[in-house]
Image 1 (tube, rainbow, N blue to C red):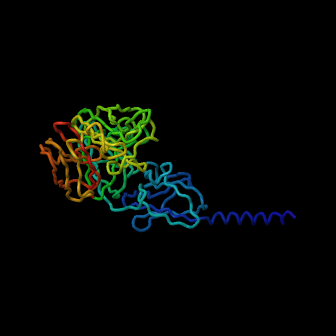
Image 2 (image 1 turned 30 degrees about the vertical axis):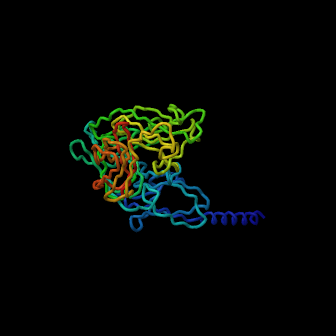
Length: 450
């Protein structure tokens, strides 16, 4: 009697187990063509195998692609990452755009799936390989006996695995092969441990989520040698920034001002929407003068009130991507006291009517054509009075790359040719500083080179 009862139960268990084991087959794939694969091979670690970096070896396939296949249940949520080796520290840094908890993730589909072969440390397949040469000046440091290294998202943030070459006179360099269009973050290491990492200034860095900052770069479409920077600095060694006064102004005459007043928020004050109150200058114009350091790159917005709910919408034409679907105003601080244009709230230009004359009264602005450009561009500007004009090209970190012109210019329209030789593909800032009888002002335009 007992045997008749047990047999159906055993068969049910066997049927259930068989259904579970068939599952959905998922093939993970990673392209290692931009990496040097060690003898230990390429591994995958994830929530499905206990996060062991050395337990799950991936098999080499064609064209530097490595694969690993396993069965899962449809609807199962997975997190994982690829390891260039078999230890933590050799794992990839997954970009935020395709990460969950800093890992890759996947909800298992209903059918067998062959995943796209993504580039190691990237959200996308490997694209055009580009050589980027990083350079750091260590002449103001005592270099560690273990040498100078670079750590970044392109090499797994390992502080001791990527040694830079001593080029002499305190200069160290390293050339990495990365994918065009990739966004990478990095910093320099004096030695092989994180205790020797540089302290990247906020003016040329992005938050690392731990109270500090990383250097950053969007990889251009051509081989590029980055400008030399001093260890833990935004500038070359020996550069002494100048403290200047910068007056920010906004015209609120076309909006109803909040009872809490108008505020300024930016990278120079911690992006606090309520701590930097502007003064009512009359006729709808509000302003504030801040002491800042020349050469620094900053982003900012005006706030009608004290919360982010009342932040202005900056147009794309005069903004840079804020990473949240909108745009920020931006400025590279010049070496002279400067009053910025009283732009209309939420606009690139002055309001149609304003009681206070805009400091753009000695200029009608700067335009660049073509933009994007490749090889040569024309810079056009118009002056309403005779002025001394300086035009410079600055990279996105605030480093001065080239002085295009500096001379006295007559009233009227002027056209200057910019030869882009020596400038790699990417985004730059073209800044014009105008010293006239009425004011010293600065105009900044974005320049894209492809």
